[in-house]
Length: 342
Ligand SMILES: NC(=O)c1ccc[n+]([C@@H]2O[C@H](COP(=O)([O-])OP(=O)(O)OC[C@H]3O[C@@H](n4cnc5c(N)ncnc54)[C@H](O)[C@@H]3O)[C@@H](O)[C@H]2O)c1
Image (tube, rainbow, N blue to C red; front, side):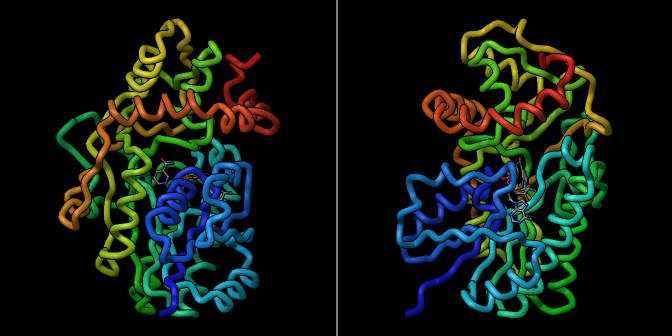
């Protein structure tokens, strides 16, 4: 019997990278193809434990390169696509929106055309709760799959645009698709420009930690491995055409998150430095995951167990993040947080 071929785009990034490792280890009977352009956010060193496995393959391509993408799909004839590749950082989208439209919108459309051409069995588009905009601080309100799309940043607007294209390819051409909208992820191999790894890496070096505004913005945190399990389930069992929200009811203010890390590492809260708030900073995100739970998904980490696992992972894996905090990233940090960068 022919082996099942799964294309994972963005598999050198944070969530796609965790998903690639999860799938390579869980399904030796599948061939997992990691497709990535290796932008500043992509790195292959994270795959040193699986890179020699027979069922792991890597291909360096830009998802917006129509010719190369179509050629690849025609050659390999993927059965499934899990589409993670994106420009993903809100702050970068505020300073340079154009690349977000090119990669997230045009790149997704190119992949949809290729998927249609070879007749994939399922195209799972990995999106974000940020497409719904923001909630107020009323703790009884949540994003459901029916919440209108009201993106507030160029990043979330580009993701919402790609969601609409994915939906349209299902409605117009009958392409089998699912869209998943997940809350904020954290865990191993998270690029150190995002709140949790930034905080852990700076606290470990006794450096000041920037917190936007008053730190009261609320995010709903999910451990990346629980997100991977959700995508695996949706890929195999999701009803074609449906959207699934992914979240574990772990709402915390940014300040609570930073203080939890500081206290776990036994450092002083004096390391916190409040900096000028991000433009259009969404107040609160919170997910209602009932629909996905009915499909059979349940998170395995609470915020407390997940953050403890993540902190000890960063302590044990300095080899990975210390090489990342250098070069281009240093320049970016200085520009973004000029108040505390020396
Ligand atoms: N990080 C979160 O908390 C979160 C939450 C919900 C949804 N998401 C979504 O999950 C997906 C993955 O997020 P992440 O945090 O792992 O992102 P990431 O920035 O860590 O990784 C993105 C990957 O995509 C690759 N890439 C970028 N442009 C490309 C192109 N043109 N062609 C091929 N590859 C390209 C990068 O090299 C990188 O490896 C994104 O679609 C994001 O919108 C993220």
